[in-house]
Image 1 (cartoon, rainbow, N blue to C red):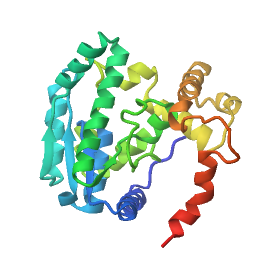
Image 2: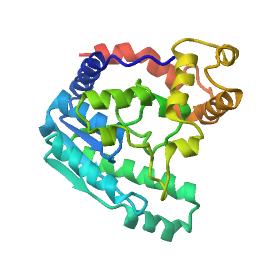
Image 3: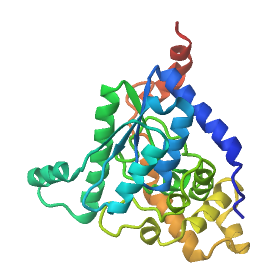
Image 4: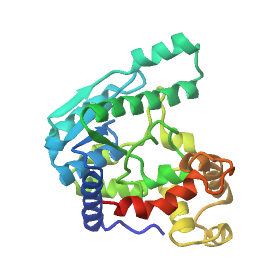
Length: 277
């Protein structure tokens, strides 16, 4: 059901998009968080192709929940794509300071805080380097809401945000990412042993087939069941996650008090602002 990605066309479009975003923002440096997983590896490769390795600053931000192999993979990726400007910062001391101040956190609260610490760290560097934070979220994660709000969701641009996870793996191989990393099981690494597919309850391949059917083919849930793309249980998992997490992709709601809300104003003013000398 899910077709293969035209990897060459995707590479051209995404690298052009990255260059355009940096030119529009008049920014020089791309700050990329590199985890050792397929998404960040693919974004790193695309950003280097778009801007050159000298305009990329990589940050490796492990915690005690991060397997040492992921850290080594991240270092190897940075080296293999020629990025000279990079740093490794263990975030546990920062997390510990949160717990000392706010009290002991649950597993999920601690994991979300870790994601937000990483986001804040990336933005500190982006500010210092007059750069943009290049996000690593893919279309599967975004549509499911499988990310931390104001954590890994807090970025300036999302180069692979229109690629399903299955497609990201195909593009990664095309870009020269080692197969071991391109096919590595995905994980936010927010706690020891954390694996995305176990938490979601489905393989990404199945998730992508369902999302592609709903979004790209415009099929109804009944049609998906009729054509046996997925079982009712699988469909309920995906639609349930989307319904619960929809707020993550929407701007904060604002009550209408004046004649024109901020969001309506932005829509009206976008042409004026963009065309103003």
